[in-house]
Length: 367
Image (cartoon, rainbow, N blue to C red; front, side, top):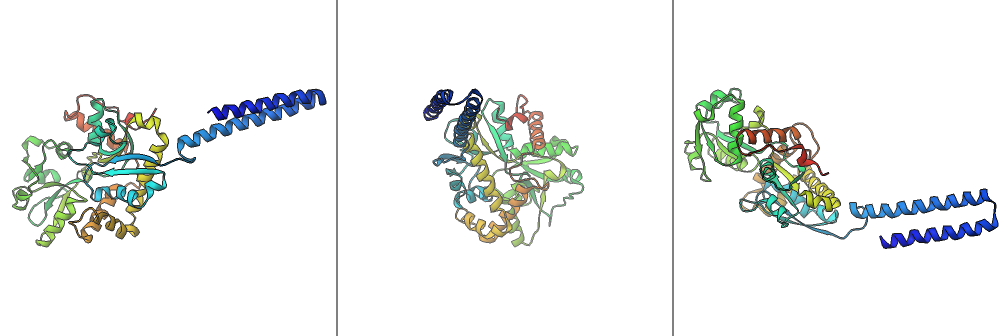
């Protein structure tokens, strides 16, 4: 700023000197014309200085690498393949970012870590965002990664009589596994409501991480993430000579938003160019990782983290992830489905998961 002011003052001094000289050499008309030209030159110089400052703020000028921490929602798996691609393929680096990508999990809440300054960006599902904001958290949603929620219910179609065309009648006679307190409970309760069912009159089963009740047939429908657990369970059924089916709540109009990219308003206000570049890098990574031509490379990257799964399974998980990230509407990667966000907030309020309504539209706006 100091250099810019000195430069402008210098231009003014030159203009004043030239004006004095011109006063003695030429008539008024010519003097005014030249002075106006000098003033125009000064205005252009000031505009150039302002443009250089804006370039520095937006990142289009020369910038040193920005260090940020990115906390994921869960462990490294197919649901993070786009993030891993951005890191391993140098997309973050090419955007002037040095990003530390950290696994998530039950003990790591991305929104909380952003508020505490331990991370600058994170991945959180809409229910996590809405619940946190209802309690006063500072959270800004900058992109939506999944267009369809991966949470579905798997069943053994070789022995379970579930008719997708008549879901209400089927659910009345089946045992449905639910993780009470998990988002699958909220999704199932919303599904039951849309199908005109009273959840209290259905046969439900409180599940844990032990799949034994499912394999024994004590539970007919088991909640799982379609693109990760769903693929491995489906593969195991196939080896046993059975076929897997999936109950997808999205098919019946339940739109409960899953993984989204978040930061804080406080951080975004003072680091707008970093936020823009980070969002771009993440979306570019997801777009490239899910291209059919890059399937082998994406699987190779994922194999470095999912060491217990063979390449065939990893490829199927990535392909299933692509369908969830891309959705059926043909939206560009990162598109925020505001109507689905509104439905998610409404489900949570109606079920008493939040005590007050949340301004969903405001979650995506940075004043």
